[in-house]
Length: 240
Ligand SMILES: [Zn+2]
Image 1 (cartoon, rainbow, N blue to C red):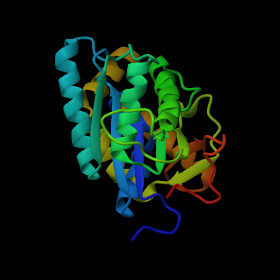
Image 2 (cartoon, helix red, strand yellow):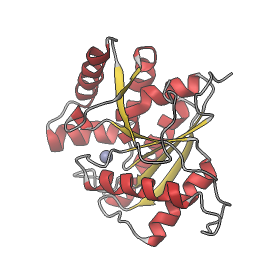
Image 3 (cartoon, rainbow, N blue to C red):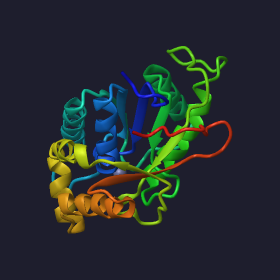
């Protein structure tokens, strides 16, 4: 039984394998726990994110890592397979995103904020905004029929929370363990961030979740904003 006003179906779209787990796994786990259908999509193949493993092999490993993570909460998993660092806004890409939305049929979409740090995150953010309009148009054809309406759009926090002022928080204290379990699948990234950025993956993510928790008075939280242009807003809370 889904609580009043909560979406029936949520689609989260991240640029790279691990972005969604980093920034909203606790929220997605909570949605799943409440009986909401959760879909997780990864736009690029993550093939640039390693010093040693060659791109093709790396993409396969990261795809398996992301799929395993989605399985933890029983989410539907979509792998769009665009080249890491080389995703652009063009007609073909827009239609792939529109098709994804038509297949997943969300009534809430979660993706990167347009002011995020990474070029791929920014491109994906714009593609999702554009495609979530396109997907509702009957006269624009992809394999799947149109998904009526223009969905509300929630934007993810940024890595470390830099350049991001949240308007909405989700208490993820109860699903923190699930988030850690999902993140544990990303062994290639745990190593990459240590070797390439001198970053302790789990410490960085826990510090952010705790800081967002302090901001709203709970142990662990994830933070969001919403796209407020017409007709995206709703007069009730959409997050769990
Ligand atoms: Zn990313």
